[in-house]
Length: 169
Image 1 (tube, rainbow, N blue to C red):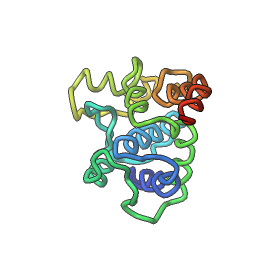
Image 2: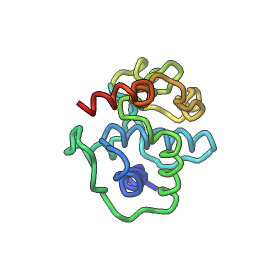
Image 3: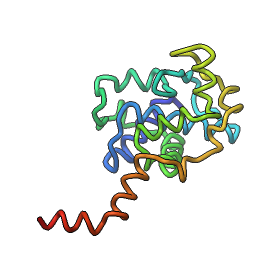
């Protein structure tokens, strides 16, 4: 399987539910890889690199770079291997509700593989399997953390009455 297979599966299976940017796709593919590696499965042979905004799989980045910060609506291929679809769905279940910025922040947290790789070798350095296994990636889930997604949800519930009043004006 290729990293692009997982990215394509995310676009086909979840792209209509959410705003999937190149940055979000790269973080989701990375966390799919880290989660599987914890279970002893190496999802793809391509390297993961530490870029300024978090882990990046260069082939995924290049495939969708023309989108910039816009949503990626078209997969690179419509052929989705079953194992890629399963990895995409498992990853979506765990991380899909987070924004690209939330995922970047989560990848930058203390104990993550990105920090040790980026601090050691700088931008575009390789995040090795050993780096991932020595980190908290694939162990911790970003629940209860202060994310943009959480903040938006709190505004809706904490200020529901005020928003209804404003909507009536």
